Length: 187
Image 1 (cartoon, rainbow, N blue to C red):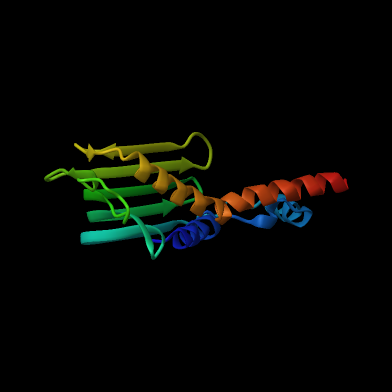
Image 2 (cartoon, rainbow, N blue to C red):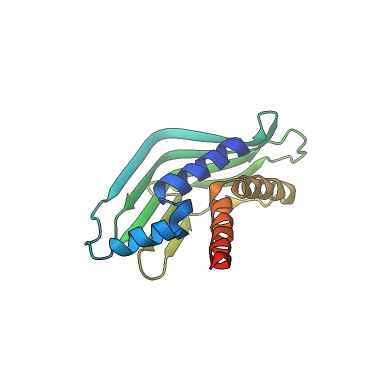
């Protein structure tokens, strides 16, 4: 999974799943939303479930030639539900393993994260975002073995941040703020 592909995935999540709209602050959009306030909210809901058996491996890299790490998820599921009231995401994985795959790494043990819990979930993430109120995020790791490798942590942080900074999730709020300022300036 290269940085550019991660950016594409973040863009899809931002623009499609969350229904981001660049022009939501324009006068036409405000007029349309004010005229639709007297209608009842839509009861449209989206449900998505992805399950896999066996290992699912992600090779993380800046490019194909510069590998960073690999993440292996065994026997897991991703459950996404969205309605007018809330959005819920659940990720459950029976076993998780992370390895340092950098070519220039000199670590004797390249294992970064290991979590295997017989008969239980080694990793679990539950996220609930209500339409009104506070969001809730719960992350659980059962009996993890984690080795902190500072150089690998720095490389992974750079990889993730650069993908985010080039995605629509990062660009759209800044563009909306500029459009808002321009709209206010014209008044």
